Length: 561
Image 1 (cartoon, rainbow, N blue to C red):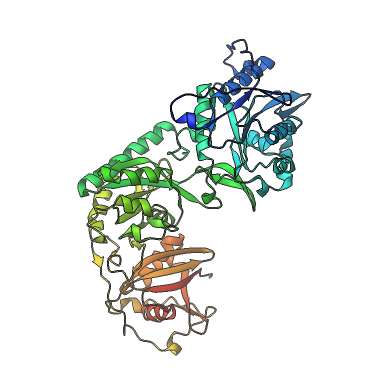
Image 2 (image 1 turned 135 degrees about the horizontal axis):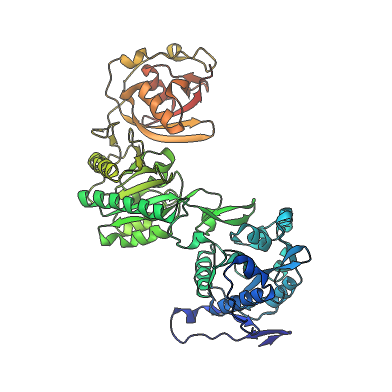
């Protein structure tokens, strides 16, 4: 097929299989296979010059013949580095490309691209004026849902792209599997706006492998977040975590357990606020967020939970949200009696949990001492259990398993954070500091009394570190949600007020990694004044000032001597 002097070879569409419903590319003219190269030394391989480039060109064209896309109006083109005098330039002229449809607009953008060349010398990094150049230098993909979100200085072909009605964009680095060198950039543009490019990234990765080319190593397994440890150590770590999950689930007949960890930043995303790092989901929903994704160690005892298990593999959770996110943020533990009652913004897997009849969930932080990696172990309780009375036994088994595995540190279990309404009787049970007893909710009315004159202590007044109240007779009070702000950081946890100020300070200190003796807690009273909490008797007024009998709002600051 010829479109205004652009010669394209018609795709071969299979008569069966899923790929017959996808868009296959019309690929640019036939390329003769080059003489086979036998050089294994990178320096020798580069020395063959044009023959080496011919081989890469041949492989890229072969890959384009295999690629398929969800979008019909798509342009895929390859940018290759070439030496021009003392400089290295990235160009797509005379390089393979493919069109989903040989439309005038796609052909027009292709011709404009052939007239461009970008400097990619190591000594000219300030000249990263285009996505292909940035991708070539960084070795990581760059994408956007809509080209119009780029600033003109970051996308020199933006005006042409808009005229050609192009929106979705992905630039993808290509590596030589033998040398590990970046040999170019594969660029994808579509008429449609893209909310995610995960399918395209995975598909391109698989196709490149068939022609002995590679994508970044982080895509070797999308379910496994990148790790800074060796494969051998990582595998040993995963095996140990799997054994821990299996022992706990088998002992307590738990239907499902899985591991969460922070998602690696594996791409760059362009949006209204500029170009920033993005996580491995390649989804606009994760832009500007710190996300968590499931790692390999998982254990499924009840196969009825398989739908939920599969959904978790592709879902990202925002850090500090949901049960697992809160456990990671606090480096402690968290419990929810019924995750299906959580808001979808708080927990995106709500629908899948409902289908699989998963309700009670307990999560706890786990640190690998040798690998220096942080994880969260998430356990789902049997459907007939929606409170925390079984958690102490579960944690005891967990501790024994971790001691046997060695090399791990379990998160702070001194106070378990509750997700969900604390007034819900199914959710307001609380595991105590040693996880051996559960404190039930009780009425707080008429507990503790003090006059305003007794408790009016301003922030700049003498910060007496009185602990005389700690020895007072403990009174039975309710477990409340404590919300604490320290500078720009926030934390939330459930706390039984009868445990007193000293233990409250220690809990806050652990959350913010401070020394309990060097912090002070304050609250805002009805006159908008900051009141210093100096003894146990001050906790009841702090609770009253929050306007709720089930939550307390506090401000934490460090004492400067």
